[in-house]
Image (tube, rainbow, N blue to C red; front, side):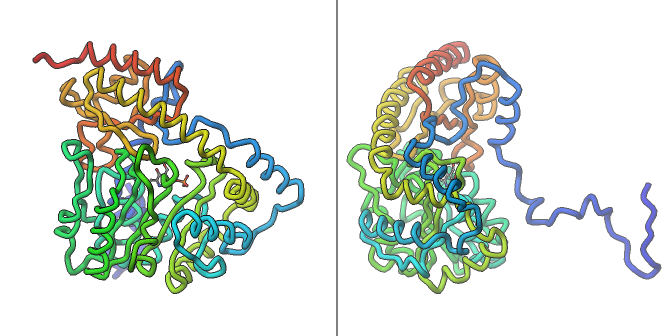
Length: 407
Ligand SMILES: Cc1ncc(COP(=O)(O)O)c(C=O)c1O
């Protein structure tokens, strides 16, 4: 029993243990992915399709640049914005690829991964009570980032029946007088859907019509397949001044562990975002920034080599899942397959993922972790070797045969 030691006259209140965490933090559930990684860490012989990261190591030229950086004594802070060399190279890259110009001195910020960029964008721009329209299923960090900033998410669902296409009319219907921004994470983790040109144009027109800010997390911009050609959201007419464009090096250059990403925004907005970054982080790791510079300057052949390999795996893995009887949308971007598991097996996302892990030692992530419409699906990352994927398909096939619903 705790003794109330507060002076007389001060009203009593619940014990600190019940009040220590802020309401905002308490309201956000722990990541649905986390629990599976904890179970996984205790098991042997698991094929993990759970984590969203390349199986490739960072290309050697980029690693060497990191080593050179350390050897040269570049072990100090950089400018809060990041090194000017990296910002200049990034500005040139964005101009060349997407035809959108950013001033490297005032409109680009180097961050600790796209993760930090997402968090910064929300914290710097979202006020309590502001609404953010977000498609789902989508990356697990988006809704919590809105919640931590004090905002409210208005979900727009996407479904397998429509190839997970985002319907601009549904986006517009979700807008209220409190809506501050649209959040677009395309190519999409976990569905692998992309935004076709005409849909992107309509979304841009909606943003302009309703005078909204747009957060565009385009970290998978380089991982796009077939005839799809990615366009940066900020490159569309009327969009540069209202878009916070986010990207990173983790996926395309296989640099997840280096922790380096970026954010591009008009100078007036970036100035505020940099405040949050400078007080919270100071600067992204110097060695990682130097390695990222090498990636931008000389990493193109490596990106294309890895992309071609993901594309091969994507086609055979998606075909393999469909052949097993798990209906799977043919992903157009990123490196995930998002099979529907509930119809074939009668199992929920969680039950499927848990039983598959226990019975066949294959780790996937329950689709429900990515939003309500992810229920009945699981996410499997195919950025792993063809042999492992082949073996995983065999195990999943065996599992589904055992659990298949009659009829
Ligand atoms: C859509 C999306 N955005 C951002 C991130 C975070 O990437 P980074 O390693 O750059 O922080 C991920 C990682 O899985 C992601 O899938």
